[in-house]
Length: 570
Image 1 (cartoon, rainbow, N blue to C red):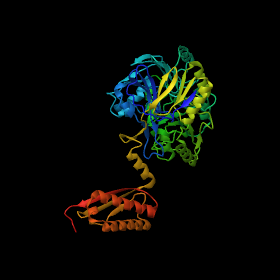
Image 2: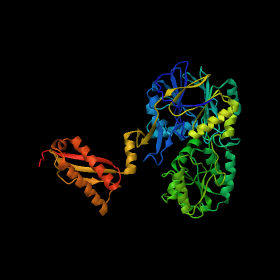
Image 3: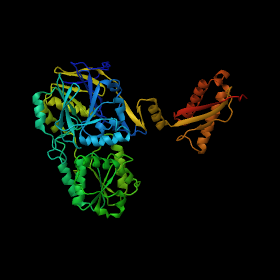
Image 4: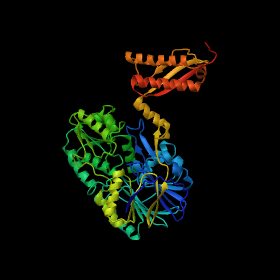
């Protein structure tokens, strides 16, 4: 039975009872990124993952977005921990931003811990936050939850599925995973372990939906390695490879490709260096040769260098974008050079990546993507892998998460084909009660998005953001006007509208027309209104707004600086 949630019943519960097992996603259900999931039982809440997504061109000036945690922040006395499945930004990137609101223990693998420590250090929390290091196959009790950590395969070291055992039943939270017969870092996902779990009985599988619409299997890192070796060997000019910095197996492949083809490796991008340092500290990449400094790039023959650069998603401040627009201090590209995108396009990043490809092509640089050669495989399970997981785990309930609506629907349809008794599509904020009788929708909680604005976290629904987005489209205008106590104008008002008006004759004429209207307005106002700052300010705003709508067909945000000069009655 497939069901979806349409009700808007609010959830007023504070602490889940002993005979309740609740599930509530605050992020990642109906979208790619921002994964944050809550499990409630016996008076306590446990969080699995706490991730971010990245801003896009629809949100002015925003780089990082994360779930609004108001619901669990109000209940943080009952929040007993955050368990991180792995160290991808969409699963752990919000921890250091939100910890002061949550203030609970953190559980993470050694690799994720190394990366998280750097983030905590940046915000001054390193000495305040305790991270409990977890290992594959480890069992641990966190409040009323008995957890077991099951190692899987993904595009990052030390990914895990989380088993949560309770008196109501067992939940398998898969995290991100795949079935790779030849992983280059870590071991392959052990289906025998998952079958044993299924034999014991699994109440619900909460699972990755990213590739639920992709037929077949996701492919192996070994295939990418073999292809990259051949590809780099054929290229005569300078080679740049961009990939997700966290994909340590891919980094190892790229480094080996360079070494086998007589090329020295240059790293360009801070996140690359951070990941490699973390990987080395916990036992990965220890045998790679030393890297060449970026400053030495110009002194090395083009056929003898390979550059690993950040920016596979077209991020404007990343290394590859700076190289493409000739804004990099040490690295440049010329005709005959090649850039390999060893990555996929994350939904929403199509336009910035397309612009980056165009910039490179305009420099006569050859661009190679996964559509040209096998230079990337996904870290998420395709349909055959999902079917295999359902075959061995045999859950009573399927809850698709980690995907946009079409991915959740595709996952739900696949689960139905696997004869799963109960299938529930959820969205952020839905609260489900899980039992052997199936999932029951019991209400909704507040959800939303927080954006990082400098050092502040503000809601994307806040008046600040609404005004900012309005100004991005319609511009802004500032009127400065000085009046005496009676409301008589002392000096000619000053009107400015950056981005709408400049020093051209037509704009000066338009500005003067609006100022003339302002002077007429004040002349005709009754004395009572001219003496009232609030009334006068609003009438001036309305007059400026009408002027721009009439003369410019624009509706800028209008601010009025009313200066009341005391002791100056004319």
